[in-house]
Length: 432
Image (cartoon, rainbow, N blue to C red; front, top):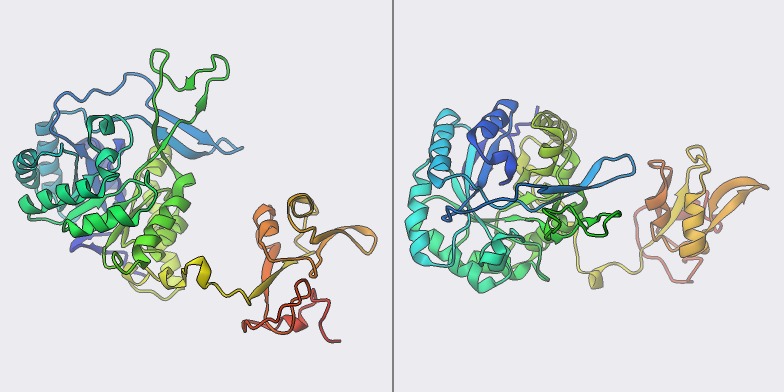
C-alpha cells in the first residue's frame, strides 16, 4: 500500500489532505471532528486583530447546481472569524497538544502596519501552530477594509507583509494568493521575494450567483440587499489548475512549494492538483456539502491510484504533469488527431452530430448504410474534441493520432510518430 504520509515544508501529516481556512475550521469542535474522521491537517479559520468582526445574520451561502441538483459551485459572504482572538488561540493550543501528529496552520489577516504584525505573530505562533498562512485572497468584506484581496492584488503589498511576517515568525510562512488578478506570476514572485516558504492557491473568485426571479433583486439578500462574495467548489478547479501550473512551470517561481486549493471533491481532483504542481491539497466546499467523512474516499482513492502507478509516496506524484505543459506557440502543429466513434457503445443520441453539424466542421455523418448511426468523416475532421466533450457515454468517442502520410483535409504532411493511422479502419486512405 502507498504511504500517504505528507511532508510539506517539513510539516508531517498522515495524509496530504488539509481542511482549508473556512467555516469547517472555525472552532475546536469542528477541527476535532475532522481529525477523528481522518483529515491530515487544518488551516484554522483566519485570525485577525479586529475584535469587531460581525457577520450577517442572514444568508451567507448560495449554490450553483447541476441538473441533478448537485452542488457544483458555492458562494459565500462570510468574513474571517468573529470569535475573540484569545478564544481561538486557547483552542488552537489545546488541539495541537491533543493531536500532535496533525498539521495545524494559523491563517492570519492583519492590516498593513508592521507594529500589528510584530505584536500578533509571536502570540499566534505560541499556540504551537506548524506554520502561518497569510490570507491575501478573500475578495469580499475584509477587502473593503484594505486587507485580503486588496493586498493580494498589489505585489508590493504582498512582499512587504510577507517580509514582516518572516521577520517575526520562526515557523514556515505560506502566502495564500487571490485568483482575482490577470497574471498569477506577479503575486507569486512577490511572495517569493518577500521570503515566503510556499504559496497556497486559489482563494475564492469574486462573484454574484444569480437574481431572485420573483423580486428581480440579487440572490441571496440580507434585508433586501446583497453583496458580491467568493466563488468556490468544483466548478473553479480548472482555474485553480491553470494558476498552479503557471507557477510550477515558470523559472522564476518553480521552486516555490504549492498547497493546492480549488474544487477538490474526489481523489481525481487531488491527482490533478498534485500532478500539476501542488505538494498537498486543501479542501473546503466538498466537506461543507458532504461532511468530514469524505476523507475516507479521498485517501482510499488516492492510495489505490498511486498503487496502480507503482508510486510508493505522494511526493512521487507531485509535478509529474508539469513537463507536459507548453506555451501554445510551442505545440506540434504537424500532429493530427481524428475522432473515432465506437459504434457498439454508441446509444445514437445524436449529440455529437448536432454539435459538429451546427457549430463545428460538419465532420460526422448521421447515416450508416442507409440507417441511423454516426460515423466520422475523416476528410472533414480537425480533431477538435468537441464530439468527445458532448458525448454522454464515456470512451464512446476517442481521439486517435494520424501519424504518417498526408492529412486528408488539409493536404499537410504528418510527422507525429505515436501509432499507425494508415491501418486504422476509419482512415479512408488506408491500404487494402
